[in-house]
Length: 416
Length: 63
Image 1 (cartoon, rainbow over the protein chains, first blue to last red):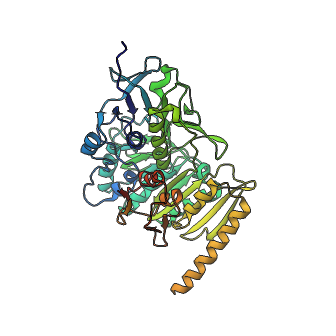
Image 2: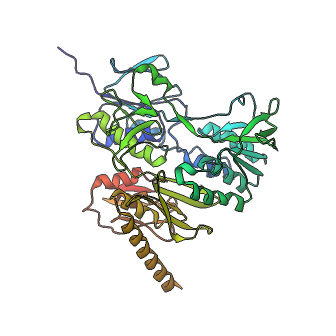
Image 3: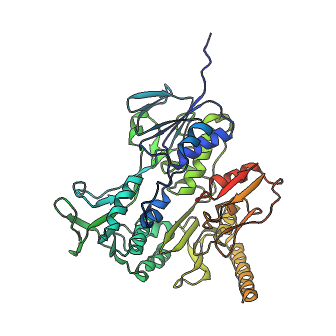
C-alpha cells in the first residue's frame, strides 16, 4: 500500500512574490502544508518604502511588514522558516535544502529575488551601503540622521529616491552616474535627461559620465575619488548600481539559468512543478513578443500569485503576460511608467510639458503604442496600461490622448 | 461583496484601475474613487487581484 503523502507547497523567498504565492495558493483552496522560507529573520516586508518614507520618517519607523505573524500562521496556515537561506535544490528528489535541512515538496516556487551589486574594495569601510534589505535601510537612515555628506553612486531609480530622501533631510548630496544620461534603458535617453533635471532643481549635485575610481578612508569612508580626479568628501556612500538575480545557489541544480531563471510562458522553470516569480524570473511575455525579466514591485506581486496557483496545480497553468508597471517618487513627485520604452522609435508629449512639473509621454513602436510615462499623471497613466494591453495602435492612442486633454481642459474651466 | 478603500493609504497608483476600470478610477486628487457600489457583476478574481496588487495595500474585500 502506498502511503498518501500530504501535498506540500514550498515557497523559497519570503518577500512580496513569495508572500503572494502563499496567499494565492490558499485562495485557490490549497489545503496542504505550506512552508515559506526566508533568508532574513524578518517577516515579509515591503521594500518600496525603504528608500522613501522609511528614511525620512521623524521617529524610528516600524518595519513595513506586509503580514503579521499571527495572520501568516493562523489564517494562512504557513510554516515560517526565517533566518536561513536555501542552499541547494534537487529536482529529481523534489527536495530543497534550507541550510543543511532537506524539505521535500510537491510544488515549489522560487522567489529569492536579486542581490545588489557592490563597489569593489569597499567592504572594509563603514559608511558604505547598498539598499536592498530592511537592515540596509536602518543603517542608511542612521547615517542620514547624523547629517551625513552623502554620495549616491548610480542615478537609477533607487539612487534617485535615496538622493531625494537625503535632500529632504537637509543633507548635501552628490549623485555619480557612469552613463552620460541616466535611466536611458528604462525610459529612453530624452526622458532620462528630463527626469534627471529634477535633481538639479532640488539642490542635488549630479555628475554624469564619470565613475567612482576609489573610496578613501581607513575604517570609515571619508571621500569618493572619481575617474576625472575629482574628490568628494563623504560620510555616507550609498551604492545603487543595479542588482543581480539571486540564482547562484541553483547553479548545481541543473535548472536552466540565463538572465535569471529561464521560465516558460506559465512561469514554470525547466523542472516540472517548479515555478519562479519576481526579480529572478525570465519568461516570454506574449504581449510584447519578447522575453522579459522585471525587477518591479507589481511584477513580483503578479508573478507570485500566478506561480503559487500553478505550483499547487500545474495542470491548470495558463500563460502569463503583463504590461509592466513601475513607479518612483522623487522630491514629492511621482513618476509612473507602463509598458516599455526600449526600442521606441518616437516619443510624443501628450500632456503638460517636459520642462514642467507634470507631463505625459507616449512611446511608439511602429504602429503600436509601446509605453507611457507620466510625471504627476496619476489620474491618466493607468488608462494607457489598459490600452497597451489591448494592443492599441499609435494613431488611436494619440486620438485617445487628445480627447482626454479636451475633457480635462473643459473640466478645469468648469471648476474655475 | 464590498470593497473598502483606505483613502489614507491610497496614493493613486491606479493598479486597481488597470485591472477593473469599471470599478476603480484615480481622480484628479490622486486618490482612487469607486465608480460603483454594485459589484455582483464583476469577477471576484479581478477584485481580489486588485486588492493583492495594490502597492499600498489600500483595498480590502469584504463579503
